[in-house]
Image (cartoon, rainbow, N blue to C red):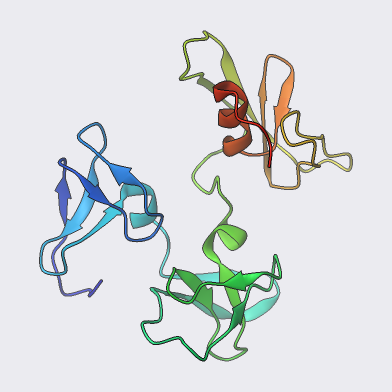
Length: 175
């Protein structure tokens, strides 16, 4: 999206150009009328410039490479391929690339030591806790070690991500 184009809050329907989420009237998103593009409110707040602890230079958000047939990008953190047509961070000096979620985390806007209500039919509270201890818990859904900065606890059950928590509630099996 070009910086000189005005953005508007839209309450109709659209697909976020970054995360591909489809929002209807229950959510609002930001729309650029000139580009005919949409961003959900979470993706709207992804910083254009940020820093990575292992790089002294600033990282710039890339909005996707249109002609990336001969280019291969690899994420420094997870060591998997980066799709050049999706958003990612790069350092022009060091030529490193990072997935947005690998650098900022899936839960970049959540704070620890908060309690939120379960959005399911069940009347339970979800405790968002720091996961910085030397013995990190295992996720009760995927059975993997919780390695992210936050862990979610509900009725004595640990979840490493919001996706695992939601999958448990909806009855989805782990891949």
